[in-house]
Image 1: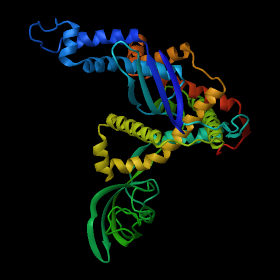
Image 2: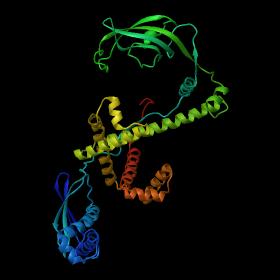
Image 3: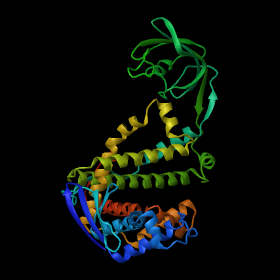
Image 4: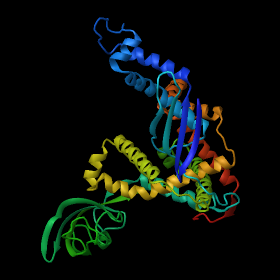
Length: 435
């Protein structure tokens, strides 16, 4: 097989492929064996008519068309490899020469990955936040544990405090008139949760159990009910019940109750180690993200819209899978959120464009630095997938090959290696913990 590639536009390549006559003849034999089983020719049992008779009956063009469908996909893939062409869309195929007894010549016009003009990508300044963990950090985590495992105790008398869970009756009024949906009895509201209209919860702090209070608020301009958006309202509120968190003392018994440790010191040590691990991962991630952002900012590339469209659909599919794990589908989600699939596509597009540019730049750096993926690295990735899905690694490999997913695994590994390369070659500037 011979293949040539000619760039005919900025991101368009014309492949010309010639397949040897021997392969054409073999494909014609296969085509004959397929077609002869599908037709009835008078005087012959089904499937037994000679090839010459089949050619006369269905026409040589039909037989050659069947053969071409067998040859072209494989020949096209070989041509892509031979000419190092990276397509981003399906090709337009035109048969130039297609006759019995001759080579098959076809042309494939295909849109390809755009060229990336790389700028500086090594030695770029990147801030690495501090990964130090203080005693105060450990204490804060212990407080969170205390609050998570706190008991709610009913307050017999007293005033509402921040973080209290209250049961309230309320009726809302706009322009002196009660409005639809503005009334509830024994409504559970955690003070300070910011789940109610802004300013509402704060005004209940200090109100006594059983007391009534007029709460004055203004609905947000973007409030979902148009008839209330931006309008001032008064809520008549009564405090029916107050429940307050009762925190367990920080001692060995607390450690036993909330963890697998026997002492508070052991729990503190575990918290410290986990916080350090999290902080180190965050610092590493910050360096990697910063290095990629800097390299991408220094590169120039014109992104074809088809690549952005494909990335948007990929993101939509991923979102659909996540929603399915929660028991809802995309249609239900759009119904609940009063949006549409086109709204979501529009919102996803900027992120999709950014992701595509990142991937194109990472791929270009991989090529410039000869960063390749070994068979061992691919096998390790397949083994991880096999362990996750609890299947034999060889079965997983064959499935991925059939689905054409091995190339994506190769790309993912290569991009991760490039990200590590950029981080290792970055100029690290130590930052604060908040950086």
